[in-house]
Length: 429
Image 1 (cartoon, rainbow, N blue to C red):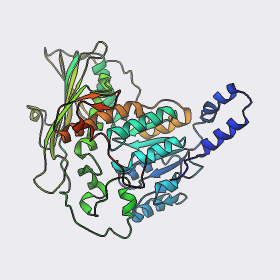
Image 2 (cartoon, rainbow, N blue to C red):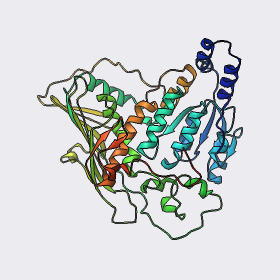
Image 3 (cartoon, one colour):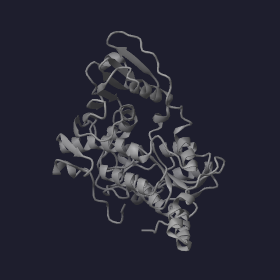
Image 4 (spheres, rainbow, N blue to C red):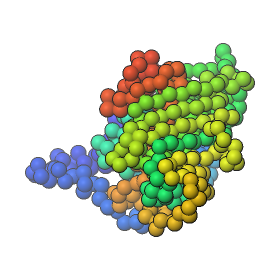
């Protein structure tokens, strides 16, 4: 493993060595993380450069793209053609040895989120990482703590958080439009895209460094039904539709209701009748949150696949969030919202209190330069990601679990085994 000493860390150590007083030493980190001019361009490395990775890459292209990394040489060549000045790497560990980086974007499969993110944070870099931040609850917590320790500017890739509609929904809920909210129903109709196949042995394509792709996960013979986008449908590499889409939709009640850690989680589901995938094709997960300040206890229920809440068909929405309050209901999706008041009253739209976004990626870039906050920093979005992944822990354990967030444990040793897994030899966080 390499020694993750970045340009910032090198400068920090040099400054400490030459510092004349303890007081001077305490000022080193703030000085090195000084506010930059908005016109100064950051040096950014992007890990994972196709599909969602390419989307992220193109959205940070206002800056200097100095390094590109992907285990698929064909995909890497396509990104290099678009960004010819960038150096290319198959192994993100080599990319992270660079001393000229300011920040990195991590857009790998879920099982490879935590390690490059953690190493970048240890190297003093700011990080944008795709949801659900990491593969396991334990990994998410490590990343959250590293980000806080290193005072990094971070953003998780829940891009819809930047949409105007989510902001208006949050304002309505916080203004008490439907009264205290005690129940939230979330449904998402995505299905497993490609039925999975397990094979005894296979040879990966010549343009793919498959060993690097597997990384810390258990080694499995190559097959297209768990590669590229299809990794989502196996617990070795992803977390199913819940891990794929849960952070996008459950983000809305998390934001509107000031949620953090659930106290209880349960889940049930059905496997697909086609293929050998181990994640559920149809699922229901339930989270219970205790009262917060003047807000009552609230339950969130998630459905995916063909499972939906009773009566949801009437809303004619393939995916939506339904807040149930004492005075009425608020139905929302990415781009629309609708109120249903119990007494038929008209609700006045509250004055906007949340500014419209300059763009999810641009929020992060601006915050890196100003050392300001982001809306989906790893503390907020990490709490969200932990909760989402706990839904899979409950499903895999077959139990309702009581969650102790402070101790990072459940009330069940059976469930606890799914909070963390051993890495393949040669890989460490």
